[in-house]
Image (cartoon, rainbow, N blue to C red; front, side, top):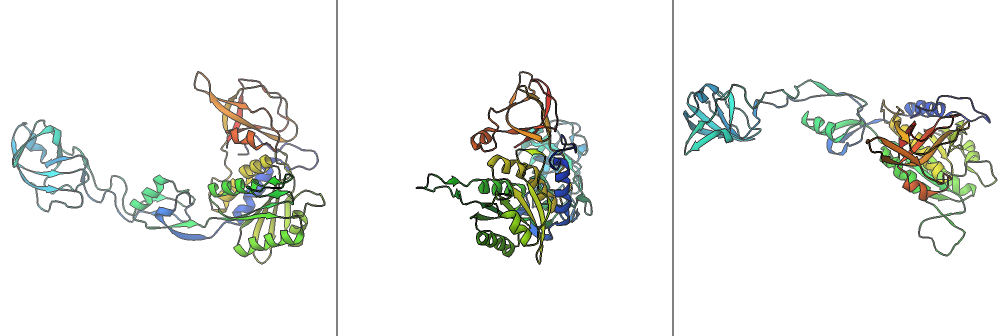
Length: 418
């Protein structure tokens, strides 16, 4: 994620994005959550806390890969020789006897191969007449047989700690006969909006109110990233209101309190002062980032160790900071070794861009394909950090490194999908 953001020098004490992300990841890994055991079917997106070895062999026996007849290959040469049907092997109901010369059993896909048979005659290559069957073709030995252990064997180490579980790896863990998996607990993120001007959606009768949506969007993003979320609503610009929200987060056992707004230096911006009163140690306050410069990151040790991530109040600034910092933070707190790794892609610019200043820029943009199928990214018109209608149209952020020179349509650029 920090690919275009080499630690270029900044004015006014702003921290380069790459350096800020490095600090966030280091602290998040120090605050890694504890292990818990969860049913395999509920582990999608969770991160394994221990290596898993298989508790069984898969398949556990030689099995048919086709519907047809289990026979001895020698009995198919020459074709047309009648074979006596002596039984059937179905999945879960194996044939108990042995197939001898001139004999066959009906078999279904996945069923256990009977003793004596060494190949499968597909039913479309067979002629059935009463209790007799004949091969229409010569079948070689081992045809259409899945041998025991072809997939994996008992004791094989197939999933390792740090593996983020997908539907495929969940299927594998279940096939390995693990009903309960050791995973890292979901980090607990409490999300708080601040400001007297804010009101929840559905508010009527107050034309001066600003509808609070940042908290909903940030909470949704945190859930998608794998966190358990407590929505604390809106704290008014009064110390007792902010303290009550901090207390609620602490009582819930939040690993991180995410505040939105109130982190600047105005008389109504209380988060920084109250954080300090409660013992928070601020690691940085400003990042060389557009939008999102006033992103604050702190640690708090008040009987239990936790983190405070102070997002800017402008909607797009809050969402960009959440995408850049909270998403990898949540991954790192779950022991994901890939947390913070570059997920930047490249695309062709669809418009000219001016030279950049000392801040890493993130331009809201849409994605298309040119006639050759190449990905093209075009910045949307108005990049003001308050415009949710523009952000809702965006599919990606164009990332412009600090002091990047002018760029022109058709050039390669870096993007981050949103």
